[in-house]
Structures are given as structure tokens and as C-alpha cells.
Image 1 (spheres, one colour):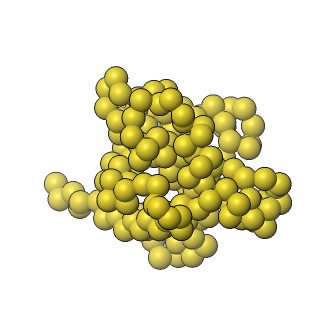
Image 2 (cartoon, rainbow, N blue to C red; image 1 turned 60 degrees about the vertical axis):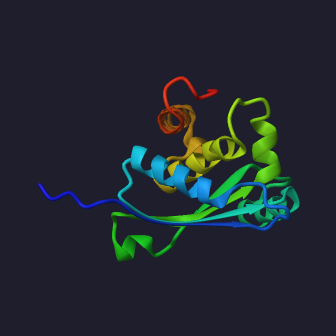
Length: 157
């Protein structure tokens, strides 16, 4: 059986100085998460911003006031190129993500990984706003992937 190796293109841009996360570590963790989630091909662009910038995106694209931790944007034409390609943008508020995981006994990169997984799961078609059952299904998948990435006994959730 000839099984093709996963192909991932992951970019991490951080608009803050000093940068809050090690990009090389995040890319390794995201690759691991994609494998756990069964994604064989991905083109992800991760942008880390301040709360103020996140609040602007939240207002402009979702019509909501205030900041949030993560917003994902699927690539409109990804399905045309190949239905096996997961493509999109994940916008993260570093301050919100780190505040919500304060006290977790892991690195900043491992803490923000939970929110990246949340964004990826959205890109896979899950939507917690479609009701309690869908929200529970999505949360279960996020926790499974997060725990698998960190290894047995290391996950704070």
C-alpha cells in the first residue's frame, strides 16, 4: 500500500513586538494536531494579533462587539482546488488566549495550540453555534486532538 505523506503549509505571522510565541514550535504543534485530526493536506495561515485588532475583525466580519480568542476564515476556493485540502486563515488574540489559559502547566505555545485546534476544527466544518449537540461534538473533538498532541497526562483539560 502506497500511502502518501501529509503535506502541510503552515505560516505563522505575529504582529506584536516582542513576539509572544515561537513560530517554529507552533508549526510543529500544528502539524501534529493536523495529523491527529486526520488532515492529510493543509494550507493554513495563522495571524497573531493584539486584542484591539481582534476586536476590529470581530466587529467587521462577525458583527460582534469586543475581542474574542480566535476567528477562522475558510479559503473560499479551497474546495475547487481539491476537496482533500484544508485551507484557511486563523486569527488569534494572544492576550485573550493566554488569559483564558492562565495557570495551565504548559508552554505558551501549547496553551495557544488549543485555540488553533478550535480554529482548525471550525475549518473542518464544525460549528458550536449550531446548537448544543454540535457544540458538544466540537468540544469533544478539540479535547481529543489537544490531549493527543500533548501526550498522555500532560493536558490541563
